[in-house]
Amino acid sequence: MSLYGVAKSVIAPVTRALWRPRVEGLHHVPAHGPVIIAANHLSNIDPLFLGVVVPRPLIFIAKQELFAEGNIAQRTFTRALRAIGQVSVDRRPGQSSQEAMETSLAVLAESRAFGIFPEGTRSPDGRLYRGQTGLAWLALKSGAPVVPAALDGTSRILPAGRKVPSFHHIGVRFGPAVDLSPWAGGAERARARREATDAIMAAIQRLSGQEQVPRFASSVKAELGRGHDRAA
View (cartoon, rainbow, N blue to C red):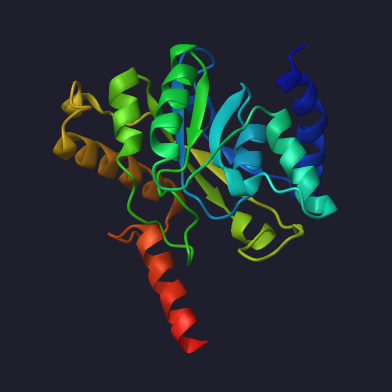
């Protein structure tokens, strides 16, 4: 058994016992070959739940900040992420983009499953924000199918600012692969990337039922941060 398999054999039963995830549509995830699982993003704990419910190894490119070594809960979470194959990248300007894209393509070239949160950051208010077009570039460049996924309830477990997770039931729903054939061969065209990404986000929204916002979550978070600074 691989290290991933050993880790998951320990982590998955504990996770299922504590949070009892309700899973729908798992048959849409292919058992073999390259695949991209694109999901909404409500909490830092989202990669853990997707990794647990998807039967095959699922690799994420996670922000470096998730791999904290502070308190016991943070260290435990960090070791769980690393044990199930998650890779950290430096998201500072000029550091992460090229590294993340090269790593992502390499994962798919090995016919593995790759997980991504196209919003790029957690939703600041539970709504679904505009997707980053790196997702479409990756899908169109690799030719891998994109399976949309929707998480529900994870924001109650580990909301922003909380250090120790609480216990609530969560839901994970998967849909059929998004048809990206209208944009085949368009990885280098900005319009094709935007339209393909919007099609994937629409598929995620149909699964999640979230209100969709035609803005980037990172921009909204920046505005909220500036407002907090002015208030202080």
